[in-house]
Image: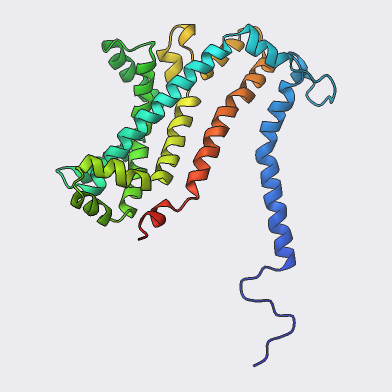
Length: 283
């Protein structure tokens, strides 16, 4: 049987389908990027430029100079870095050890433990504020970096432990056995052999923990009472008063806030595409 001259290979799209697909993707990308570009555009229009956002004149860096030189933005930025990095390191370490224990060890309650992690994620933040506030108050951790870091860990660790457990399940158990043969302790096997192979999972959970702490408002606004301990999300609220909102300053601060989050995402993305598990089992 001879194929028709105009017949397309199996699975190949027609020209009309390709045009429709690319048009849809371009439109979706434009819709996704537009809010970010609009905020950047307004931030370059001065303190009152937001009132006429479509005008293409009057660009300046006045909002950025005011933010960096006449507000406590740099203090808030430093506080956010300390809290976000602390929550990321502590949260990922706890989640990794919990996920590895459930993946490799059998102990009473190891199966219900993962379901408890999943159920905990269903509680809304508003329900957790009061009990967490009372606990931190009794521990004298209100208005402190440590209290806020522990709070963020309590919200990020369940999800991260569940995800890392799946990554550890995909790593061959023979690697653990090889570590024990070489005389490594269980923690040594975890730290030196298994954890490096789980870098893709660590990248995802680290990014999730960082973003959770970087942009969170509810806990930080309730647990941080002094301005010197404000994080960026809480500090931005000072630009909104009862009579007037400084939208120009808020847009400039929003642009600056997105820079560290973008850097962390770029670092995590590099590890996501690396086949470290497959490479680690060769030879």
